[in-house]
Structure formats: structure tokens, C-alpha cells
Length: 514
Image 1 (cartoon, rainbow, N blue to C red):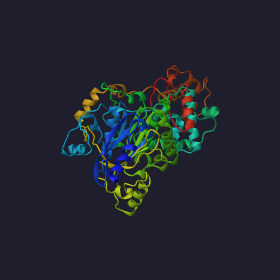
Image 2: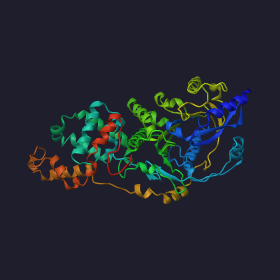
Image 3: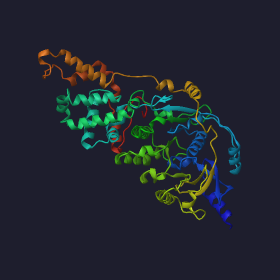
Image 4: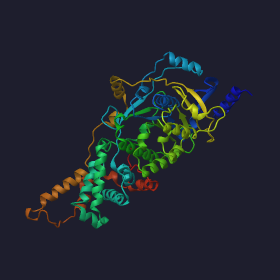
């Protein structure tokens, strides 16, 4: 059998799947596109996660956009982390040109410009649907890991959450947490130690400094109400397509701690909220994390373990996670091992270190008789990639050099006027963009301390005063506090997630991850 015939047969055998699949391009052999060697993507294994890697300008972001479009066509909702700000164009119809026409002819596909239903979201004050989470929803375990605290300091955080649960003090934003932290280290120290044990002043000081550091990265706009509901990510539009949620986080490039904080909370909440699904015919939700190195570059060992644990477990919930980064080595080996679909765009070898990385990258792909992988990685053209994925039996498909099809939506950003138009039509913007500052721990404790100060006679100020009711009793009996009953009973969920080392939902009334 001739080499070309053998190649075509190997591709057909490897990329023919049971169930629904979509064509994403055609294989290349010896520099020529083989029309009969179509490359298909099986929807059934899209919850097995994936990696899209390659140097700047090789087309990896457009690959991410193209796969998102096919998922939307198949009624699968998508969440895109738009770090560079070049994915918003998915909400606008694409346009044809000579290069696009030539590419589609080579891979034997038809180009049809499309516009997809998109929801623009933000973690800051940019235009978009505001995503937020309350401190209570994080839980003590995840907050401890985000702040990088030791076991002793983590114990103090757990005590703060327990105290606030017991006394019906809602922890909504960071100023609530800081107020309680200051209270237990000063006016309420004796009261707290009587019920919960000794508290180290050194520990409370360290925790306070860590929280302020998180505030300096802009976390105040992320913590608070109204918490986002997971169900609002999994919507289908009027045409039966999955809604593509574009989270615009261009202003987080220099704030990796806030970005990793958001990512871990979101993944933990998805895991806590979504029921076990097993093997579905197609996923319920797929996340694409562009510039994924931002999650890992300042992550502690504890955080890396969190991510690895969630990536392993969330597959059974019908959720797929795709990391998009310049270098596959940006992703820890323990996480990389969990990624079933690998799309490797070109890497550049300018130094000895670059050549070493390319050699290591080539070793992560299946062996093949048709390519010399290490050399080919540096020779791939724009919009070309080495591809391998898992079939429905979990077996890797043959490695193929592929000319990928281009996105059908706009390959450019939206204008401000277009963004305003999308926001005006949003079905959830009004729900989440209202300003809410409910009475919570900060306001309640401030009022109590002020009331106590006013009742204290001048001659006894600064001295211990015996009151008919302790501050704790007054907090418990407050009519205002009683209206905050939604935080009661949340310990159960946090305990379950704590066993996995994750934070999670604490509010019973709604399903949300922030």
C-alpha cells in the first residue's frame, strides 16, 4: 500500500466516531492537504478537557473561537475567558475574503458566515454582565488557600466563618470579613475566646495583610452581591444554539492572583452545583481559558492541587475545560495528563532552551510513522496544528498535521456601539448589574460597637463594663440579623467541599458560583 493510501486509511480509522461529530479540517501529508483525510471532533469526549498551544500569531485563539462555534451549533453552551480582548467578535457575523475561500477549498468545506448569540461578562467595571461572589460562598478552605495561609491561620479563618454562621452575620464582601477579623482581635476578643478558644494576634495580623493584598488587586469589585447563578451559563438561544458567554478580563493580565481566585471559585461552584452525569452524548458546558499561564504562574502548591483535583472530578459533571497557552510547559504535568484533546500550533526555536521545550513537547504526542514531530512543530503554518484527541473508548487518535477551518464569525473585536447594542439586548444584565449593599457583618458590628460606646459612662470608657446582655447575645437577638437567615445551615455544603479541598455554594436559595 502506498504511503498516501496508508495515511488516508489511518486517518479515516482514527477519526471516525460513533455519535455526533463535526469536521474541523483536513490532514496534511508531506506538505499537501489530503482532501480525503478529514479530521472530525467527537462531541462525546469534549468533557475530557483539552489543550490549545502555540506561539504568538500562530492561530490558537482563532482555533478556540472555531471550536466554540461548533459547540454552539450543537446546543452546547460555552464560556470563553477573553484575556486579550479579541474574542468579542464571535457575536458578529463573519466576512469572506480570498484567504478564507482558498482555505475552505483546500479542506473541502463550505464557508457560511454566521453570527452567534453571545453574552458579554466582566469581573470589573468594564461593560458587561457583572460576575460576583460573596465571601461566604468561598468558604474557609478555599479562602485559606487563595490567601496562602498556614494551618494555624487557616484555623482562625474557619473560626471566623463558624462564628458568623452561629450569630447570623452575613459575610458578603471583603469589608465584612475585615470587620469581623478586627472585631475578634480587639473588642470581641474575650467574648470569642470564651466560646471558640484562644486567638493569636499574630495570625489575625497576617490574615489582614493578605486580605489587603487581595484588595489591592481589585478583588473588592468581585466580592459581593448579586451572586451569579450557574444556570445562567447554560442557556440555549431561540435558534437552539448554545449561548457563548464571553468573559472580558483584559484588565486582569497584571493581576493573576485575582484571576486564579475567580477561576478556582468558578470551578468549585460548578462542581458543587452540577449533578453527576456520567458519560453524556455531548457536554453540558465547555470552558476555554485563554492565556492559561496566568492561573499557574503565581499559584502555590496547594492551589495547583486544587486545580488538579477539580479537573479530575468535574468531567463526570459533563463540564469540559480547555487551556489555551503559548507553551504546553506552562501547564503543570499533573494537569496536562488530564487533557484529552491536544491542538499544537507552531512553536519557535530561537534559543537552546526553546529547542529543549520543543523536544519535551514532541514527547507528549503519540508516536507516528508519518511525521518527525520534533521538526514539524517549528514548521507549521498559521492555522495549522498537530492534533490528537480521544475517541469514545478513551483511546488517543493518530497524530495528524491539520489545516484547520477558520471561524465563521468575525475575526476581530466589537466596536463600543456594538457592545452597547448587545448589552441592551441582554436577558441577564439587569439581573446582575444592579448595585446591592445589604446590611451585613460590617454594618451590624459597627452599629453594635457604636451603641456600646454610647451606653458606656465617661468614667468607665476604656475599662471592661458588665452588660446585661453580651455582645454575642445582642447580635443573635437582633431583629435585623434574624432577617439574614439565608446564611444558616450553609456549613453542610462547605464541609462536603472542604473534604475535597474546595470552596463552594453556601446559599440555599439560589444555585450560583458567585
